[in-house]
Image (cartoon, rainbow, N blue to C red; front, top):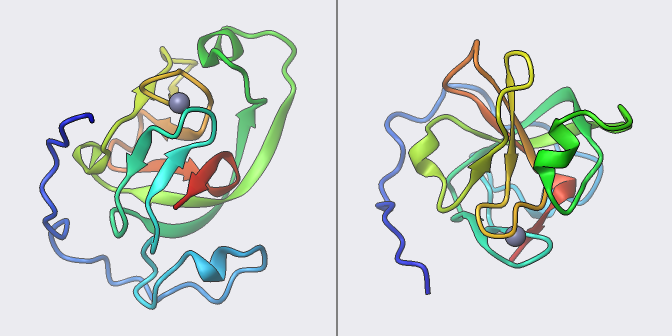
Amino acid sequence: MAAPCAEMEPAAAPPPSPPPAAAALDAAALVCAQGRNLKAVLCQRCGSRVLLPGAATFARRELLLPAMRKKAAAAAAGGGGDGDVVREHWLVRDMFSFENVGFTRDVGNVKFLVCADCEAGPIGWHCLDDKDSFYVALERVTHE
Ligand SMILES: [Zn+2]
């Protein structure tokens, strides 16, 4: 049991953005009326808890993520240039909203998010130009 250090406080004022229209995918089943994640977000590989329910909001944005590797560091270090365009994300506004998360070292002005325990990833994307936006790709995590 990892001792959770996050408080279950609703992160400040909710953003005034309207709830997103029902997404294709099965995102509809994962998003509550306020546009937040209904389920906990877990690492696909080891089950490590990344986000608690309600910690993120659903967001659509086209981001290019390197292909999943066991060690995301290897992916970030280059290698191939193969990747996926990911469009559906959990947007986290505060790094302390994460239960567990790791980062690759900077790639340009971007850091990729990886599992804090097993380093599977990248599971998400963060740009140093926008310090209050962390994107976690829906298709790269498990929901429980
Ligand atoms: Zn993991």
